[in-house]
Length: 401
Image (tube, rainbow, N blue to C red; front, top):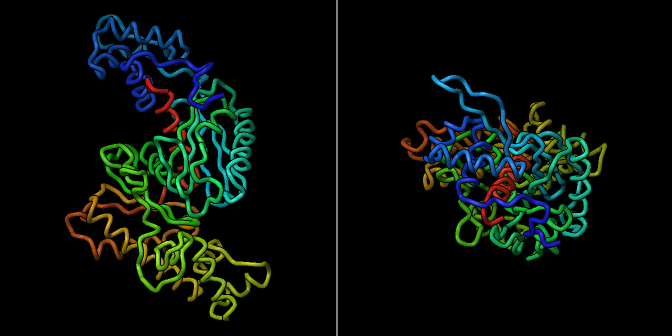
């Protein structure tokens, strides 16, 4: 089955229907009077569109509205049985959630999975996990969204030359996953999905201009401008992990040297932590290494909490480098908020945040930073699946589905 097919899926027939569904998703139940006011449509047209969407099973009555004088209008909400799948593929794990049509998570699961196993294996696991979460929250599946840890052609629904994803280059994720799930699929970069998740359900809720920085196995950035993800001409906007900081720095997975990611991504942090442990320069990490094969960002975070000087210095140096790049973003984009997230950022927490804040506030113009919050992600590991689900609803609630 072609993933772009809508066999078994309700078709959006008019632009007002698409706008009405998005409005109910964004704001919750509204009266017909309120819908008419927001959409600037006459009452008879709203009634006709609501009736048709009801016939398609996309909306339902939600009781009478509060009285505004005269006859009370009927409240309208999205169908309670509608379901969206949100998928977040990381370098070493896969997360899948099923949400309602407003992108509230109903069931969620995550498991270890190496993206280097290739698209057939990884997307097969996605389909299996999707079946698992759907059993916990049954309903009518409208669409799915998936975030991938590499450059993505949003229009084509595929990864393009991703550095850490062998076998994925120009593989049609949208078509393949759509065939497995039997629904339309939206494909985006994982950091863009996280930015959408934070913008619609997290700490940056309703902010129109924000920057989301992910520090995980790799480093990336999602940019939201005027409420929409900015992807750039080829879809690579926000690829800050491969900004070169030093022409003689460490080798990066992209094939270059001295990239930010090569200094402070999860793999780089683990590399430097191993060097400290083996060199006897970190008692805590040395003790951790004595009980397992390798140390990770989790161990670095724990060591820093315990006051281990070596681990604290790793975070400090990495935070300074990250802060330099974020300061440039702040000066260039002037966002309303900077959100720091991703697996490594969650492990290093406020120590990392403090270093980034210190550099940004010192290096960027006071006008840009005077009212600029720089905060940790509120959604944590669910930011990606929520944002992917949101992207899925955009696909479901459009004329071009």
